[in-house]
Image 1 (cartoon, rainbow, N blue to C red):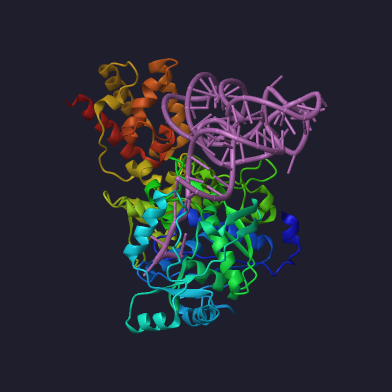
Image 2 (image 1 turned 30 degrees about the vertical axis):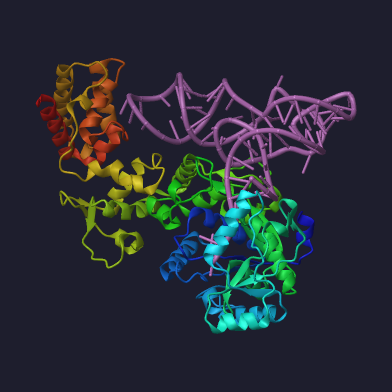
Length: 524
RNA sequence: GGCCUUGUCAUCUAGUGGUCUAGGAUAUAUGGUUCUCAACCAUAUUACACGGGUUCGAAUCCCGUCGAGGCCGCCA
């Protein structure tokens, strides 16, 4: 299958991503865009963005913005497209009406398309009839032989009409670079509507014209477009156009194994950004949905992907979107970040969660914060306690290995910034220990920690002293001491270790929280 | 209902006639390291949809069955 690709010299390959701006850019479309982008990069071709907004009612400029913003965030740069220019524009179908008009008029003149005046009711009735007798659903061709006079009369009366393609009856065979030959008889779809009027082509026609005009060499799209392909090929033939090459990607499925859609949580890719997924993680995850390398390698950067990508590694069957694996890859990429970088990435989430605030006023959304802010001091919103960037780094670092996505950071570290922790007294109790025991432990803890000088308040010392104490209290069971300590400091059943937390919290606050734990324990 | 595509562990997949008593990753389970959680390491469990052929030999080739998905719009 790649033999054919090699016939085309590098630089000549042109691919496109052609979304319709009728909703957010979701993860399935992103993958399609990505494979187009990858292919273009690999073959040193051109990646074109075309906005398919022929449906004026459903298309919205804000969705176009969402799409472009999403592509930019992911780093899939297109060489031609709206706002970018190029030699084959305009790149919005709504701005290409003049171009379409030429083609539609030509088809009409050559009698390859014809006016159809059938009403929706008529069409519906015919469809039901066909279902009844088990035939493929296709138009009755009632209007195919209308006389010039009849057409003129109907048009004059302003009778609603559309333009239909006089589909030649034949077997259409095309070659999919991934799947081999696919054959479909055109009698299965019949005379389809290709335009509403002279300047408003529908999807199939507009696409054929645009791909030709934009000199697209390869159409890489979802498998759900296989049934459209014969229609487009016939249309291309009618226009005397050589069709491009086709690659139909397997679909992405939800956990219930149906085409991934909004109800599976296929939200805008920008929401993945908001959840704290990293671009390399998303890319790495997505590429494995339908492609695999020759080796067992699991982690790929974009450059290495471009290098190793090949159509031969493509899968033909649909793949279920595995959210757990996305999280795993994301966690992996988070662990690759330096602690400073990670803190910078987490910062907006801490602001968003109202845990910290900065003295600086910013007009920008916190998610677009800039790095200079990070050289400044912050304070806890609740306690007004000051935090340097270094101290924030120390906090975030504690959870470096525990993060799967950035948005989790705030509920993990919130206890550092709060005045009072709220938890039940049962949480303080280690395994089968008695309440009394825990109380004694907290007392001893307070006494021992109180003796440590402020200048010696650091992780290593704390560890030494506390482990010694733990030995005295629980012999081998350090949990007797460490569990209530950790709960007292964090109010959580799971967290980072108590020594490093105590270090960052500081002596005063640590003792305060132990005191608080005692109160919680004695309360009813 | 018609047409098309597709079928290896729960999930993503390796595998192109012998090296497959089927490999890797995620997930799960157990164990190891300073309480918990995570990370890391080790171990374990789980798959060639089914039935026929072809062949000395089949996950791999052929046929049939079954399953799954997609498309059948004056949406794209």
